[in-house]
Length: 394
Image (cartoon, rainbow, N blue to C red):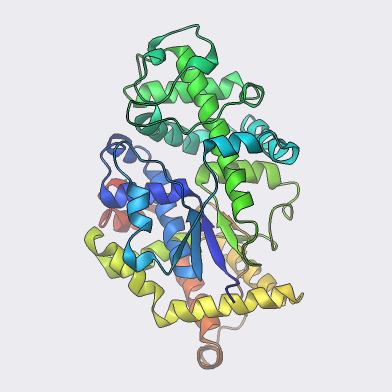
């Protein structure tokens, strides 16, 4: 039985596809938004290597006239790993917004955005720069002021809008957030002639859709196996950290663990095999099928079963080890996952290592991965990434 699915947001996979297939629509901002695109590449690689399956949204709107996310998930060699999940079209999500529980979750997240600090808004600025290029459209209403907000149309003759509206929920967004995003849009894209009123409606409508899609996808995957881990898009991580901080058990199927280094290290592992972008997807599959990661996935599945039976000691030891790794020079952002990983740390003798490699190779390979991950970060890491994906380097 599959106890470990890693669950990714559709926009994360879109980002990866845009980088890999060099999508023209977003080419102008990918370098500027490289941190967000790199984070998506890290999350996708982690999920592909560590998950028995990689679940993601099956609804991926075209990006301009291209379909990078769709092209990525439909590659034949990915079929047995990737599991697209249907989450409903915009009309269905607007219906969900009429349900009290669903609407309450969305409302809570909309309010949480207003509490984010300026430094926490960078991923949102990146998000909107891409969103404008891909989905603002060219409807005549965009250049008009003082229109009823509902009359602004964000589409083209060839592409209908996928955004949802709710004046009450959109009205929760503070002016400070709207001003910050509209300033970023005007400074970073060709939308300078769009009216202030149109951009304001765009910012609030996009945010509502982004949050509502999170909860619609959450409902679509709620029957996933015990131990499944969801890695939200970086913007949604900021919201979750704000909302869930007082109650970290609230949305996790299991206690959330903090990963420092393991997620980016997975990407670096594949980069070391690929040596070039044209070989990346082949290297990703080769690494997944390697003995190391086959054993790690088996071991993680066993751990989920242990935790389901109330045995937490090994997971607590790993949590302490990861925290210890994070106290050194490596200061990359924490990664909140609801999947447990295990390791019997605290014994470093070569004899014990050889014993573990023989009797439980999954634990041994995972332990080595965490040890090696301490060097991931900073200029050296970005230089190595840039060797394969130039636009993601400094």
